[in-house]
Length: 115
Image 1 (cartoon, one colour):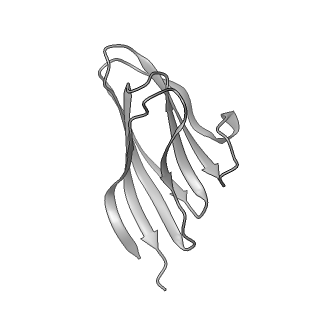
Image 2 (cartoon, one colour):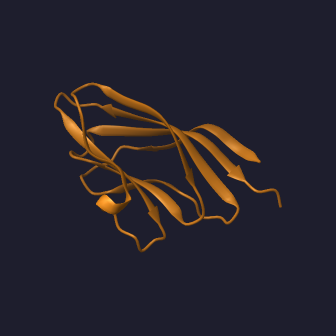
Image 3 (cartoon, helix red, strand yellow):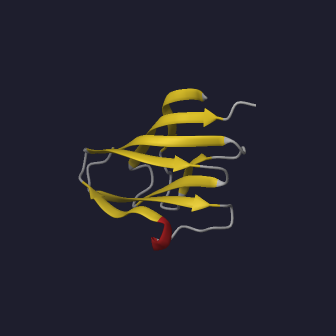
């Protein structure tokens, strides 16, 4: 059953380290990301990375990247319709090439199995 629909996560990383946007903690819960919007709020070109991780011990890298060093021009917005389904112990992590330069917004649905 869908418990929420619409904006499901936002992140504006303050540095260049990976920052978690979403995590599924509960068994029987799923998050479906239907679109990603990334706004470059600076006057210079930047790059972004997006990763899906499984479990708390996994680290970001090319093996779990969905986007890697994608360029985004100054004062522009990247938008893409997608369908990523995250289950228990999975998280979505983002990285910006400059702190406070990119605003990430995720839209979709949060579902939980009926108990």
